[in-house]
Structure formats: C-alpha cells, structure tokens
Image (cartoon, rainbow, N blue to C red; front, side):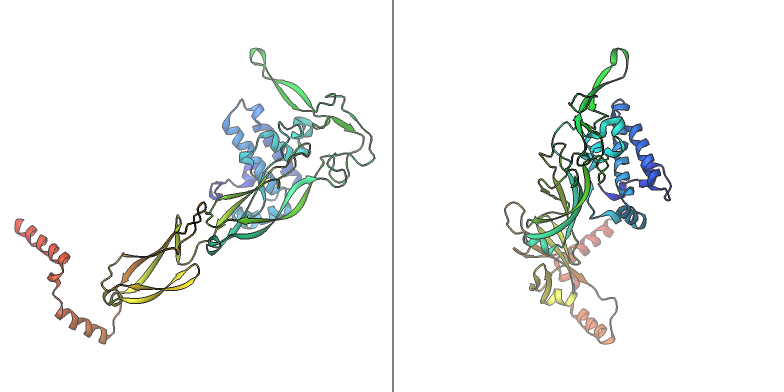
Length: 376
C-alpha cells in the first residue's frame, strides 16, 4: 500500500503520541472489539478499520519500530518486516496478538487452516542489478515456536490435561444475533486458546502463547529483469501454523532505485541526451551512459530535436524470456543562451549565407503565412 494513503497510527488507535505501551494495548483491544467482523454485521468498512488498527498496533507496540515511526513517519518503516494485514483473515490476525484476545476470541489459535501466517518485507536494488541475477540477505523477525515450551504454552513439567470447556476439540460454538436471524459461530475455546488442552502453569518465557519473536536471516535470489514493486515468494519462511505442520510464506517486495540518467520503459531504457546545435548540424561522436558503463554513439549530421538513436540490446532483460530490450537515446538540441563576441560574429556571417526559405519546411510555413494574410 502506498504510504501516502495511510492514516497516522496514533490517530487510528485514538491515543496521544506520548501514550504508554499499556494505553496503546488497551486502545487496540477496544478498536479490535469495536470493528470485529462478527460484531459489524458484515460491514466492509469495519473490516478495513479492524485491519488498520492491527497494523497500527503492530508498529506502536514494538519499541524499535515506534521510534522509527515517531522520527520519520510511515517512510521510516520502509524495509522493515511486517504482517500484510490487508490480506489476512480476522482469525489469523488474532493468532498474531493472541496474548491480548484469549478470553474473548480464543486468541485465534483455532485457525480454519493449519497453514501459518504470511509475512512481507522489501529489498532495494539498483537498476544495474536488474541486468543479472543478484542475491540479497534479509534479516527479519517472525513469531516462532517458543524454545522453552516448544510451542505448547505450558511450563516444562506442568501437568497437561484435556480441556474441560471444549472437551479437547479446541473450539466452541456461540450464537450471534437473535430470533429468526440467529447464527452460530465456531470460535477458539476461550479456556485453552484452541489447543484442546489445559495446563497448571503457563510458560515463563512466552506467557502461555507458545510463540516468541525471533530474528532470522535468509538469502533471496532476485531474477534478472524484475520490475519495481514485484514480489518474490519465499515459501515456508512465514510464521508457523497452529499445529506447526505448515508455515506461511515471506513475500519480499523488490524496490528498484531510479537511475540519474536512464529511465525505464518496460524492458527499454530511455536516455535524454543534450547536444549543441553545431553537433546536431555537423554530426558528432558522443559518449552516453549505459548500465554497463560509457559507450560512444554517432550523431548523424542534420539530426533534429527529438530524434532517437537506438542502441540495440542495451536495455534490460525480459523477466520471462531473458531477451534484452534497447536503449533509446533521445536527442535534445540546446540553443546557447549566452554567446561571446566571436560566436556572435560567426553566427552573423553564417546567417548572411543562409536562405531560410530554401528549407522545405520553412518555405511551406512562409508560403502559407503569405496566403493567409492575402486572404484576410
């Protein structure tokens, strides 16, 4: 999502910028309960606000990300790893923040699928990197199984029994609405958080959630020809599912930096080349920048403003076929703004030898102009 369209995170949660972590937590809990889809009769706007609040809380509840956001705003979060809440289901969002929703929605632990949550991040490369396959190391944080309890949530040695509330199923059924329109909704068991088991002592490290934030470093291979904004999927690098059998994916979005002289148009590169009117009139050999260094091109005598010199095969490779595009050098003839006395003298001498009406285009213009005034 373009950062320019995002609302201020403090405004989303309705807190001051000086709010404490507990105040931010309470504000998010309140917003999530208010806009939860089960309580909004399917209002799509409520679901958008529900996900917006989750995004705001993820940033403001993380001291490092909150500091970057306070200093630089949304732009300061570029390159950080985050959940793509816009594509997540409400129960998956609860799985991320299960420690503050357990008693009301079961922490989202009873997912409708065993697959874990996807994550997203981004990597920045230069335009020259697009020519060939390149690799980048990515460091990110994901909620992974707690080492102390192996993801079970129970303190080692704690007595584990079948949950009395759900009978070991991990889910309970509740009713919403009333009268003829009563519907039944299956949610995670509030007593065992969807695990189907209960224990006497929660894990001291993860506080019973079974998950802990962990840093991870992976290498991503970026294929030649990739476009700015395209994503590379790293399968299995997301967060683990409820039973740990299937992880989500990591979506790495590639940002291609702009080039000071070259503009990308599909697989072609466009270079605007300013030349003098004498070079255009007499022709010249000029060095131009390419992604692999400087190369010479020939400017034919009589080149006009806006003409294009094509450098075949000097563009970017096609992502699918690998076939390279071209580099297009667009000529811009510049007229000098200041002339010294010798230059003025030479141009006056040239002007005396020049018959402007000999030029076909100029002759046509003046002939039409004469006919116009005669008609008038």
